[in-house]
Image (cartoon, rainbow, N blue to C red; front, side, top):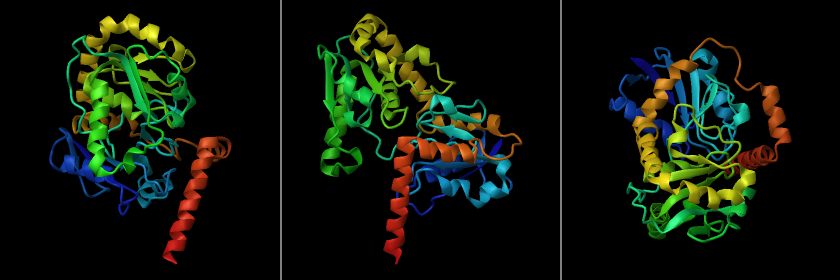
Length: 329
């Protein structure tokens, strides 16, 4: 029995729900072989289970947390931010290939969404779907998405949602938006899943949930190792976007079997609470004596200073902290 203490460094954040959800699943015995303990000293592992707090995108509060200082050898980290800076051993949903280190910092699937699409269901492929492939998403988040818009539109559907942020859609119209998104996915043999701000994408796992074949277009994406990706996903290099229509036409006959495999993989690795159980089963591999952090602070500082995306994120976090301080005064 693995004794696990699940904690968040942001207990008072309005959008912090991931750790509480994980604790509830463990306390309800929904994860076989794992028990939550409120005592971090008694736990075999301490898991910081985090969504992505807007005011601390680099998760510095985790790095400074008293439990990390007191129990450095058993603190692990799961986070799903678009920008992964692996200070601690653990599982990162948007970890670039270059930062993956087996049994230290590994890529993992998304287990939480702040606004999951409840309209996505599983309808097996019939072969009569009107679209060979489709993509609905914001084109502004990465240049490869703009290349998709230039593909031939025969038996394909594209929609640019750059003017819309899902979390800002009024509740009265959100259900209709989700339904249309889910219906387009169901009407497609293949679902294009290009990278956005980060190398990973919710869309990969939404396609798997729907029983559709995700077409992953992200050179930096590190596929979580345990999943049988070759059975249910296609990978297209970013420089070969123009080849997508021909590739998918050639693979159309395999789509029903791959879609069924995608759904099976989603049920085993991504669905809640099964996905949490799979994550917990992998945690002991990362528990071993160690010193320091997985990403040296000197390298982390260099990353923030030399990467445009990280620098923008760092500037945003500083502005957010200043606004909070001014609000308090």
